Structures are given as C-alpha cells and as structure tokens.
Image 1: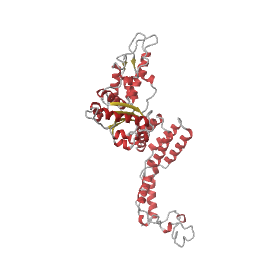
Image 2 (image 1 turned 135 degrees about the vertical axis):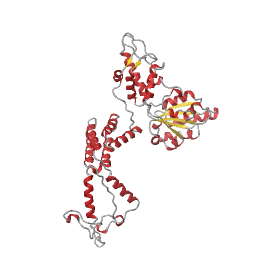
Image 3 (image 1 turned 90 degrees about the vertical axis):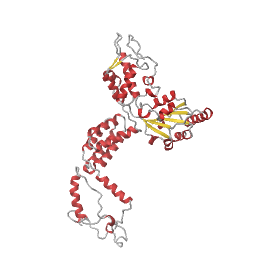
Image 4 (image 1 turned 135 degrees about the horizontal axis):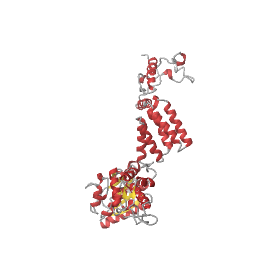
Amino acid sequence: MALPASSSNGPTLGVGLAPLAARMRPTTLDEILGQSHLLAPGSPLSVLVSGPADRGSPSVILWGPSGTGKTTIAKVIAHTSDRRFVELSAVSAGVREVRQVMDEARSTRDLYGVSTVLFLDEIHRFSKAQQDALLPGVENGWVILIAATTENPSFSIITPLLSRSLVLTLHPLDDGVLAALLEAAVADPRGFDGGLTLAPEARDAIVLLASGDARRALTVLEAAGSAAALHSTADGAIPHITTDTVASVVDRALLRYDRQGDEHYDVISAFIKSVRGSDVDAALHYLARMIEAGEDPRFIARRVMILAAEDIGIADPQALVLAVAAAQGVALIGMPEGRILLAEAVVYLATAPKSNAAYVALDTAIADVRAGRIGRVPTHLRDAHYPGAARLGHGSGYRYPHDVDIGVVAQQYLPNSLVGTTYYRPSAHGYEREIVERLARLRGIIHPD
C-alpha cells in the first residue's frame, strides 16, 4: 500500500489500517518464508492443506519462538483447506468453550463427513484440566488439533496430548529470510507498494533488532516508515528509511526471552557453561541478556553461588565467599545497582581456577552408600559418652590428634569394608595444587601401610 500524499504537516500513514504484519501475512504455503523443513510436499502440514475434508490427519503442536509463523501456518490452513476451521485462544477460552467445539465437531463429522481443524493459540496457558478437555476430541478424531506454543511442549503440555500429536519445531528466521521479507513489504501492494525506500544499512539494522522474529521486523519497519513519512520534504520526495530513522523508533533490541520458557533455560545454561569454561566475555554477555530481559536478579545470584561451589570449589575457596556476598548484596540493594555486584562475582568466577573435585568426591561417596557399601563404624570411633559405652568397648583405642605435635595420627577412620578407598582427588588448579602435596603427606601419616 502506498503512503498517502504529503500535506502541510508532512505525510503520514493512513489511520485505521491493519498493522503491516497482518497485511503481509501469507495466504498460501508457497508464500511462507522459512520453515521449509515443515512445508515439503507430503508433510503433515501440506496434507492438512491439500487433503480431502473427510480424511483424517494427525494433530500437530507447533512449537517455536514468537514471529516464526505458527499463527500464519494455521491461517493458511484455514484459507486453503476444505475442512471446517475453528480458532480458540488459550488466553480467553475455557473448558466450556472447548467442549462446545468438540460437540459441534462430532456433529459436523457425523452429519456431513467433514472434519474440523481446531487452532488453539498459546496452548501452554491452558491448565491440565483444560488440556484434558481436548483429549476426547483428539483421540476420537472429532477434531484435528493445531496448537501453537512458545514453550517447550515437554514442560507445558500434558503427556496424553503429546502422545497423540506430532510436535513440529519452528526455528527463528535467519537473517536472509528477514531481509527478503522487509524488501517484499516495501514493494508489495499489501505493504508500502513502493511508496518509500529502505537503505540496506537500515534493513540490516532491523534484521538485527528482530532477532529472528518476522512480526517484530515488520513492526519496526512500519514504525520507521511512519517516521520517515513525517520527516520527508514538502516537495513530495519519497520517504527514505535510514539507520537514524530506525534508531528514532527503537531504543534497544527487544530480547527474545521468556522467563518461564525455553529461552530462559537456554540462556542460563549458556551462562553457566561460559563461566565454567572460563570465557569471561561470554559470561558477561549472557549476564547482560538476563538483566536486560528482566530476569529475577536473585535467581542469577543463586546460580552464581552454585557455580562457585560446583565449578571453582577448593581451587579458589574465596569464590564461594564472594558469590554469597554478592547474593546477599543483591537481595539488600536490588537493581539496577545489584548488577555491579553480579558483574564482579561473575568476572571473579569466570577467571578463577576451576575444580569440581569436592562435589565429585561427595557424589562418589553417595553412590557407594546407595550401593550398600557402608560397613559398621569402627569401634574406636563410636560414641563413648553414655553409660555402658565403655563396657561395649566404644572409644577404646581412639587416638586424639591434638595429643601429638603435628596434630595428625595413624588411625583407621573408614569402615573395614572401605579401607583404602579414595574419594577426593584434588586437581592441580589454583589452591588445590597446595592441597595435592598436603593431602599426600596427611594420607601417608594416617595410613602408613
């Protein structure tokens, strides 16, 4: 769609128009950009579009980030399939609405031989009871369910419904696809119909801001188009979108991050692995992403404390002290100042020597206990502070380490069945280098044999 002609107040976009993202929504599978792995001939989605209305088809769950085509695919099926199409939103629909759709779908199938496609957007917002209401219709073939979710179905959808559906994963759109979409929106009659120009640098900036989200890319383009139209010259020159125009309508990248969804787990996983891998720059990058996305700083601080104990350990005992101090400080002062404490702790942990020897030792000991490798506590180590203990020999022969100058004595501490077992094997990193030598001397004195 072309931009309106200039006026004394500068050209503006028309009022009351549908958003650009809605106007540019594809109406056929051929128009859909990206997701080619789901749209090949013979795929479940293509069968839904081209198959006869009286033929069954598996229900599908479309899982992917926002702006990757989940709703678009459902709309294409609605426009091109001969099946009856019903759309519900998990935000507003309840069990009663779902059951009503099921009853109508069963009647339509029995009376007219036509199957019903039910598109349920944001299915992860449905409770277990609401999802249970879908089962009879899906299981008996009254409806073909197309459900869309931005959250991992393994965590957000009940197992019986998952087992009766195909989970199809949509990927964030790559830069080339987004660039092609923006160019098409500039030229397409449904978009700007050639009524403005888009500088390549501005296009690339929008692609970067969109982060794989087609809807976001078109929203930014539309806002930039309005800004360019307002600032075009009075002589009727075609509005031109530059990087400055884009910068004027967005002040930061809108991060793709759902604190309850998959991205939450992916980013925190990358953060942990970056600290563990001693890449301080990557660690700070993921820390910044979490902070900018509004992640709970107490959650970040808890992970930092765990990192200090799990991945630095005794290689630098001060790491845990600093991590705990940072967590307490964040709880006391909050954000945005809390980011300073988190940054200090993350830099310290990422650059510290690493060792997981302490907790690996404990896990190995736990595995032995669970496997039944326990044995009785040696008699000389048993409690001797109650009447009758001496008669049982408890504590007899125990050697008190403080009675000797070096504070260490030759003595059996492990049960008989575990004598000679070694759990703690310190690394050669950081402070543990000193422990290696000291531990060898200690074990030599305690176990002279």
